[in-house]
Amino acid sequence: REDGGFGLNGDLLVWNPILEMSFELSSMGIRVNPEIMEKQLYLCGVPERKEYVWHRMLLDGTLPQSIGGGVGQSRLCQFMLRCAHIGEVQHGWYDPDEVVVLREKGIKLLGLGEFDEDPMANSLHKAKNAI
Image 1 (cartoon, rainbow, N blue to C red):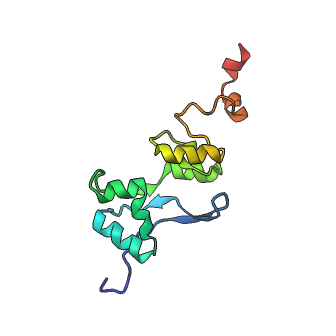
Image 2: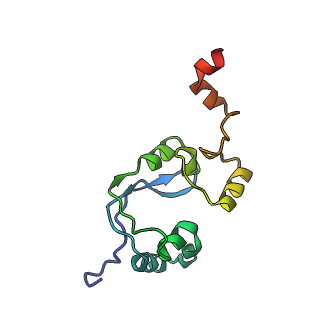
Image 3: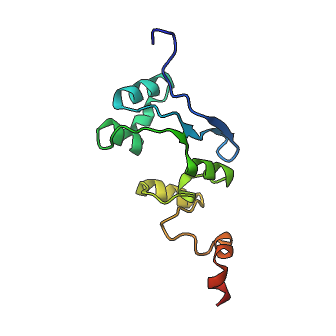
């Protein structure tokens, strides 16, 4: 940019001890379009991320431009509950190849019926267990 800045998002980041890396809690409402994403990936030195499912879908026009604007509730829950994957706190669609890798690491995703044997889940259903 002319003012010397790089034009990257001004997101709220915290250190995530589970993932041992920075973790984005918020979006400042900045639009992400294919041109900006390519530039950001280049500036950050991670062009290989263009091959990630979400990135690829945005870049090829499958997904519309995304906008944010505030603290992500699911991201905050993921951070506060010390979960390794957002799918542990929100239901969503997951790349089948990613699901296999996550299962191998013992990470259970909501919506896939993987929480029946979870002792914490049992405490949430006391009425069912009392019968």
